[in-house]
Image (tube, rainbow, N blue to C red):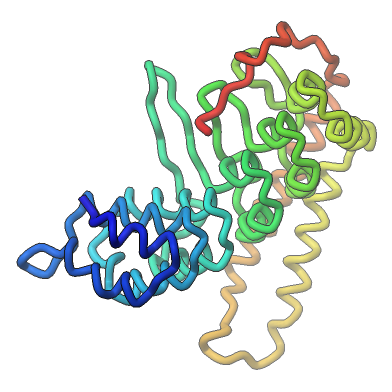
Length: 281
């Protein structure tokens, strides 16, 4: 277990004390105790203190951490809400944000915890935008009730996050295990602005396709800078950009077909009880 003095120092962003007490979680071989490391890094990611986070990482606490630990810390950083900590974690661990996922089983039901799902639940629009800008699938993540990121954001009434997810091509027709769409969840919990936003989006017909096309255009604009000299540290992988454009084109095509086949969802939620809406938070 980590020293309570060390945890207090992290919570109060006391970098001097952090460096002083770090030795208490090192083994005789100089390695950090795994259980204590998890506790210390979890506290740092949730504390929102970038100074405390840097003090810990500068001491090497991320060295020899497993893939599972790194994914857990990244999800906690999203929950903590400090964009600087999240960006630093991705840089230091070299983890692809698309790959971050924790599968959690409870009573035979599985949750797919992803940064986007957590950001949607928390209603953090800057972090949601940061994640989307990393070309993460807008539907990546699932609660134990089968709710997607946009479903959770809609139920909580996070208007700006719902708007961002719509722009990224999130599936507004996804149904959770109770059969509810994001619009029906928003209606069930009285989120009128979100209901209106989702209805406008649906009435526009091809808006999903249009939003994907907008992203394709943005990628093409980035590609247009290919003729400009760049330093090695700023180099852009244009093969990756081409691949992303192809993927978005495919999604736009599928979205067009799906919109043409689906009728307007109706508010036919099977129950209005609060226990219908559960999440891992």
